[in-house]
Length: 440
Image (cartoon, rainbow, N blue to C red; front, side):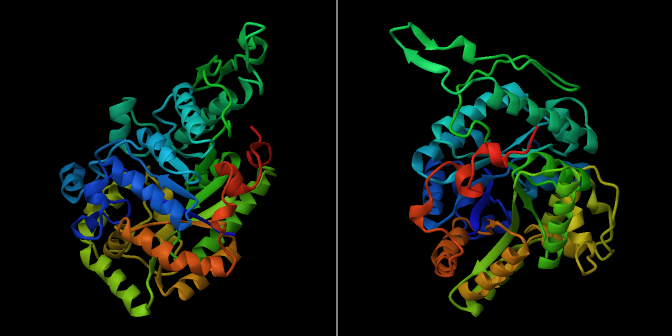
């Protein structure tokens, strides 16, 4: 069975920044409207999606040309609001949809983040996932912590951060510590609540955790790092690995690499692989091609250059647009670059910019049958499901629900609606945390 996860952010456009001009892209006007979000979550749940995934960032980036002007003019992930306050409302509007949110280990103190996430997991009946990121933009660090932290050190810090959170979630409160025993005059048993007394290189957290155990205790841990260090972190700490690939061949190489890394660190806990795909699905091939052409016509190359520069923390405005994309020593999201360098074709800066303006994903253009055929090939290569990127919201998600989901269900590749109970971990990984969470 495949899992379908809808990708978005709290900005005007989650996938194609230039989509704000399109009349069937409602998010550009709706991202500040609570009704827009609750309606979208309800649509996704009814349409067969398993979770809604929120990306997030923490700065108005200034890497391209060394200024914020292009970022603001192109609307590159700005303006953008915080997704965490949305989660409780989305939990109330849905019954089974998972809610996956991005939060940076570079900026959130683990003790405070653990409390926030326990609260959401409790209010959603165990439907929370955490996309663990380290952040990359220099201005992000200046705004929040004052100085830039190098790539590998960010992952050292992230590993310790996750360990602290898991200690709080899993070790601080015993099952049954909350007794509500009026006869004994005991609300909670003090012997069931303990300090965690964590002392590490980056954090010292005595505890105890403030929240009683939630349905999942630990939210489902997602991770999207594609650099060497990011993949190493993922196989050690994550349950769900989200990745970008331009082709099935690139994904196949990724599957083998992750398996080798997991074996090397002695990982025995299962994990799911969720490559990102951008579907353009319609009743006919011609309609699907026309929709894809609309997106291509809307994209300005500079938009992709701004996004590429900001994500890689490197100014790609300094290169000739027709020059080959260079393998530079970037400090940003290095896996972004590897998606192009691992591909079979030679990318120019211009081509990579236009492609990155809609993210380096496999674009599946066709009828429900042809798109389902391609997803089956990815499934055979190791995909447990897909992160669905949407050029137009809610249009793309509605098209997937209307055309693709019935085809996948007919093939036995997608769960029927009555099979969707339980926590997010139950639905995605089919087991409790003692089996799917990696050992600390």
